[in-house]
Length: 274
Image 1 (cartoon, rainbow, N blue to C red):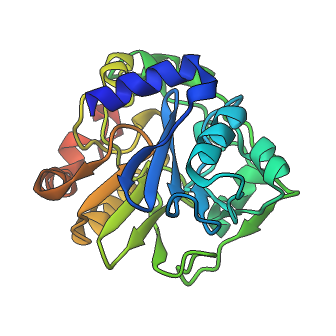
Image 2: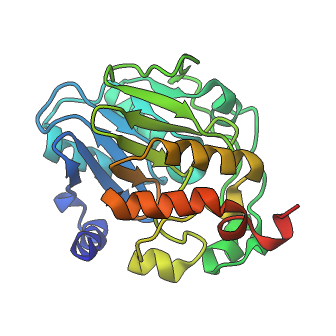
């Protein structure tokens, strides 16, 4: 995993060599500085989907990474786990380039159609530099009205018959996670993550451990706890999260179960506890 991270640091400086990291034969991710974008589909497949769109100004790198994996075939759609700036930053440019729809949970729609701003980041949650500077992160609603469509509320996902989405609110009202039952593969977005995102040092060295959602942007801690408990109950075999490296097997399940059982203690900032 450390070698993967070093490779991605090099790619950020050399866009022409942007490549994805394989998780499974048909699951890969590409890291856009501080956040992962996911790709569901086997290499060279013409049927694939992009999950999240990274930070702004990464569209060309994402496109190049996708071409290295899939050739000239565009994704069928972009599915957003939620609408924070680091997950939608390149969405508009990518949708224009590929001429494809973007899907989001109905409860997240206001944040991506230009009508509802997110709360300003909370610097008082502690934990490091990213938390301290979070009030300066973009929170204004983006307007993806030309491309955005609501997901159906029944949990089905367009173009992904083997997958379902699970509404996992808390970090944001319309946050979703993606799950494939047959091999228990989970794409968790920011419902939980595998790095302490509040700390720039932890992000840089990619120390691998299951953590709660990024605290500086989490809106509803009660819902966030319920969402983690829902995902832990799935007993995933592999988890790809919005921040941090993928985790798998018993270590993943043990740490996720611990987070679900001790969420109040481990995830909620002291001044947010009631």
